[in-house]
Length: 356
Image (cartoon, rainbow, N blue to C red; front, top):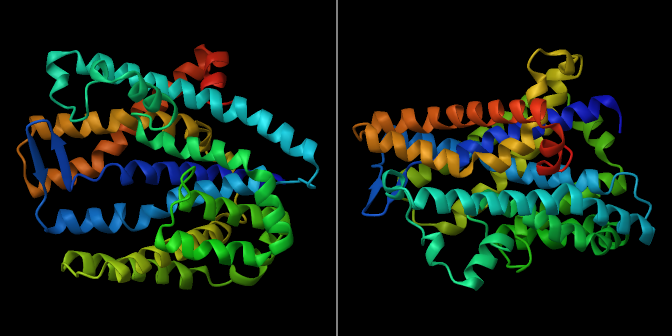
């Protein structure tokens, strides 16, 4: 992998992580133990729907596509290669997953035990969980829900030989067969359909080596695809805002916007930064904190949101202000902690981020 592509993947990954915080920042519905705060359909609702259920929904697909691309980079299909790749994932995925999962369990337990913070939690108290529920909270369904992404990556790594065979011998058919499953939400049990579909898409680009073909054919007029993406999101947002009762149409528009968005962002990067040494940008170094930010932004983001709602007068304006500012505060805190840890405890930081 050349330097340009390496920088591109880092930049897009950080931008996608930034987007994820806004997916989770939505406060259209905020739950407290004794009540629900539901936003009326005004300008705050519209903006949040457009961003959190539109623009930012490309983030996780981008993560899985990049992960699939990197996993199969330079793989020739020999069994030993998969053994080494899966073994490496024990360090880069399994250990960080268990650390952050256990940490979230501990944080929930501590905060649920404190009188002033217990009011912010609506889930079952950690101290009341059964043994099976505790095991599930650690290994399958972490209390820090964004960790499902890492869990699914672990499972995808385990079935990677099958994915390789499918992509190598079925070629484009491997993607076409999974497309309906993603669109209509087929349950694969061991991972989400979105995870499998986009991981296979990234794998296809890596194994079939078609990324250069995309660059040469579609990067001349990227604004066309970018504007199309925004128009699809706008159409879907308007339909949701006007209470259209057609879940099939809304789902198709969502999936179409994701496909268009992933594609347009990928080629838009080349249009904007092809002739730029982005790595020389003063703040490019923060991109190295992408994994830490993804793993640590919850439950901090939820706590920040609820503190704001608890202390400020509830209104449409404050709802929008909290939505826009809570992720920025959370990101600033997480990056500050990551920077300090990496500087003072580099070995520990390497372990909890899988060497990233």
